[in-house]
Image 1 (cartoon, rainbow, N blue to C red):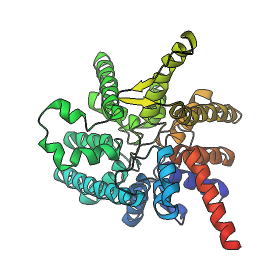
Image 2: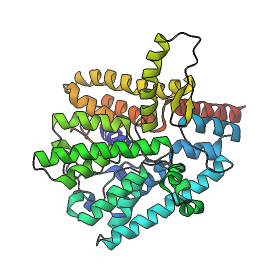
Image 3: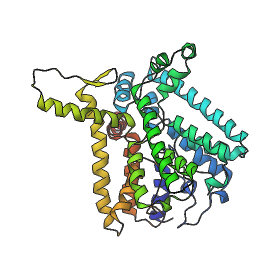
Image 4: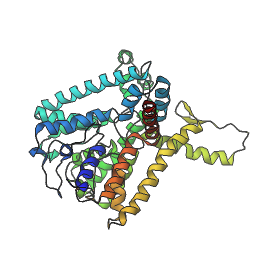
Amino acid sequence: MKLESSLHYLGIILQFNGIILIFPTIVALIYDENFGIYVESLPKSLIFYRSIIQWIGGISIIFLFLVFFSTTREARILIEISGFEQIGISPRETFLIVMRLYLCYTLFFILLLYTTGIDIFIATNLVLAGISTGGFVPVNDLNSITNLPSKFIIMLMMFLGSVSFFIHYRFWRKETFMLKKVKEIKRILNYEFIGFVYWIFLIFLLTLIYSLMFNLDVIKYLFNILSTITTTGYFLGSSKEIGETMKVSLLMLMFIGGCYFSTASGIKFLRFIILLTFVPWIIKRQILPLRIVLPIKLGDKTLSERDFVFSSFLVFFGIISIFLFSIFFTFYGISYENALFELTSAFTNAGLTSGITNVDTPSALKLILIFQMIIGRIEVIPFLVVIFEIYRWITTKVR
């Protein structure tokens, strides 16, 4: 098989959060208008394999590495840097709690989709790739196998996949259901989750107004918008039909992404909020005298300058890499706008495309997309730490 084809398939696998030990290129075969392959023509075992590697990748490659290959101290430090929140008394106990929640949601949504009339095999694959915000569809046309109830169920699943496991854990604790007042329930939710819900509500409201003004399919647009916000990648219709104006909106939504410690990608909503919080603080700090203590508040939490450094590092790295690589894409005759959309989609692991990524894409561009997928998924600092840990383990074994 040609190098171009191999890179194409490898890139597709990495883009959708997969973690696998062997990369059989045939597993990545998906329908593509340029390539002409239909998902339904693949053996069911391969369709299921595609979905299960996304499901495994949804709990994060870096999290698995932390739990089983790092010391407790290293794991705690990297968990803090990566935005993971420790639920149990140790990283391994946290992992087991997360897995129980993940399994329960998976089984629950498979049952729900099955009750809407969807075939059990299709329902299973949709949930495996949906709850992990991976986006591999087991059929060519998602719209052809979903009815109105199933679309709402998938939307709920995508939303829950983009919410922090810490919120899920706190919400399902027994004492939560003993609370009687809204204010008491709010105490178990963090600032990021409340802000994320408001953010989705605002985007939904704008989408609803836009759809009604231009007499568009409201459910279709709400579904696609939520899929973009959660970086799932499910899309009703063809993503190649996205207009230039809509691309700008989707690009921003993809880049922000979902919550910390969730299966969603992007820079994470909390980083977005932290950066917005620090902007007025920086202005005030320049105006007010230095003797005045000026704390940085995010809800009830006091932020430190380290929070700003960690939050801004990935954000600016992502922006710079996307813009610089987009210039490189133009050398191959690709418009700068389409390159921005494609690289943002790769960085956020959303899986949407403007038609650039296919089997004929030059190898150099595929390698860039693969790099963006990896860095966007496991982030820069954890990626460097993992590389260092692997290097240290190899050198130790050699000695």
